[in-house]
Image 1 (cartoon, chains in turn orange, purple):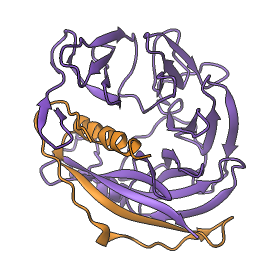
Image 2 (cartoon, rainbow over the protein chains, first blue to last red):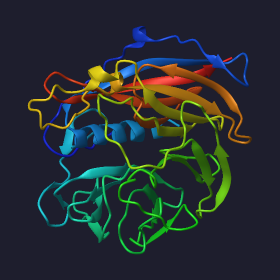
Image 3 (spheres, helix red, strand yellow):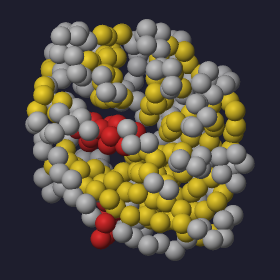
Length: 68
Length: 290
């Protein structure tokens, strides 16, 4: 994955944190057997400014698009 | 900055200034392997920055009246960009969606009649997501209404859900204030690999009064610094063919950004405020288990 950033140098950290996965009680509607699962997979950036946060999100999208 | 796949530094893109490839307020709206699309609302300009070719020149278009940062954008299969933004040019104002072709020309659409009320700055904003059908989804921000568009901007489907926790609103935009409960809005939409549509709507967190920065003086306006305390998120999954609600749940983080598809579900993101005032992006995976 190529990273493209604007502005000054900011290090990017990738912290896998699968251990923090949250299990939540679903409110079942049309799929009685379905459960919505939700878990944190990464924390990115090191003290980003608002524009840098936006750029980082774009980079995550870009990297993810290449996988699918 | 551009890095090689092995992590080594390659080059820096853009710098402060008014010339080609220079920015006063750079806002990246899309990146492909060879081009970064960057808007600069101070200069009313869209720039295509070559990422890999160091000798190629940036290409810019003047987009008069484009109020940026835009709320959302998607790139369609033909390379054109669809933006949701309050664009105040006389030919664009009042329309929620604007399609930019690679030659810099634009068309605006998304409502039968153009309608712009300055005090209702979110009325014309839409969250956007690509559809596997080739078009895109547009979700109203201030009401639970979702539309599927084809590549040419024609409406294929419209779904409206009367969720009691998300009543439609049409009044002036009210900024966050600890004296009133947060107003729900629809923050993100993503279509997954099975064609299901995931809706992320933020609603008031019971801790919302703790989300604000302590005022330094009585004249200071309230500022939310911890969005995870101000909002919870309600996640809903719709069958894209019928609009039927498949499942719904409520989570504590304020999901403010869509990322895209993931295995069996989608990726989204929230933001974490650090003690030094900076931010981190927190990425979440959510999926439906049968």
